[in-house]
Length: 262
Image (tube, rainbow, N blue to C red; front, side, top):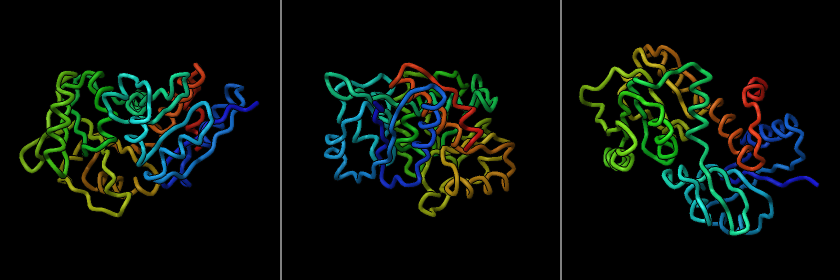
């Protein structure tokens, strides 16, 4: 009998998670059924209660809500205040957040070294909260956070200060240059404007958490401002999915053979 899994989000029709996890299943010989479930925030708790599967992925805008439905959270999910992976246990849902480790897996694939690096994270929302602890664990010389609303960046920096050298910065002042710039904001998902000085890209390796159409404007902007290299978030997507799969089945599939097919 197939194991039932799903991905919850709103909207969700664009999600590549079903294809990725079905490919992982074929790779590992596991029989599963993985489906997308479009669940607006006001209906998510009810939809999750009706779901009878072993586990699920959770994407925007539901990750914070998912954390609130868990009987147990991993340490990284507690720090993030958000969950992207759910696994059913006898006591209720176990929640994990594989985003940050997935990003670090992809950085290693790309040959991007963080130890001793000057890293800038653009954005201070939920996506940033999910990646900060794993990034700091890599040992950067300094991790700076910039945000359209400075108070949000300051709040995050204070929360994660015990884990490494992290600080909020005002990019209108003299900051940089940076070795690695990680873009987490959703500006280009809604045809928004880039809220930061374009000079942050100069001579930096730029990593965007978005991919596809939402990534294209940032790619153009970064190269126009002399970025050394620009990478999208597709590798992170596949890598975090592999870690979710491992959470459910105890087997980590090979993400990069799947990445090459996307």
